[in-house]
Image 1 (tube, rainbow, N blue to C red):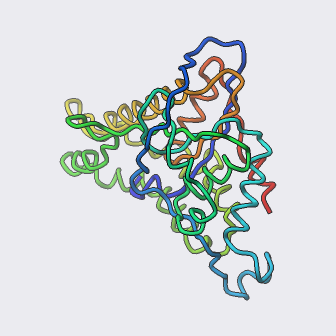
Image 2: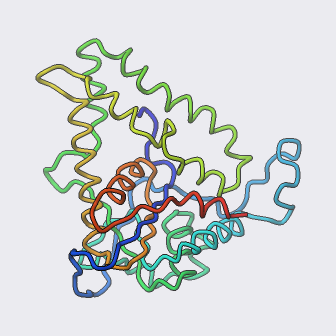
Length: 283
């Protein structure tokens, strides 16, 4: 929780089942979306690992673009009919105008995962439009991640040591992962951040915050409540654009992966599909 919870990308594959009730809005013109703040940038070129640590595993000429193509080909086996990304959009269909301008030149210069993974897979799968469903506070609304208030409450009520203990598993996971990252393929990194139940994809660090504060200032409970609210609104937007029979690929920050899978698995008419079986096919 003390680390940037959105620094890595998570994927979620969702079936919108046929024959279910749900909103199916009429098509609308594309609208321009806004890239999410702090979106992860993927390498446009491969950083060659030191030979003694990573001996010729991929071959001398394999670069990041080839790795990203391999990831895309693996995910396309899911046969997505809709690709959804972490971008704010307006309009009934929440479509992203930028995707209509997507080409190889954009791949060569823009390291954002929306372009490198979302747009790439959409084009490869023949998807005609990409939707942006991110939710951010409007003027006068509270922030959706109240960690500063949790820290202040912990300090006020003598709970700083408890907060540090709650954060420790995530910090340890990231400390272990960071030096190994340079030796991992892009697919392996995505697998690491899409494996449910780890310190960075589970909910222990969130739920551990529930008692932070006192009976009048329940800062930890407030953080969990408003984080749930943001993710519920995100999934509500997904439901507004997904049509019965759609196979939906969601490209989002890993901090949202638990709740996206939660809603996809429990909301009637939807089914969560584990992306790991596809990512593991990437070479």
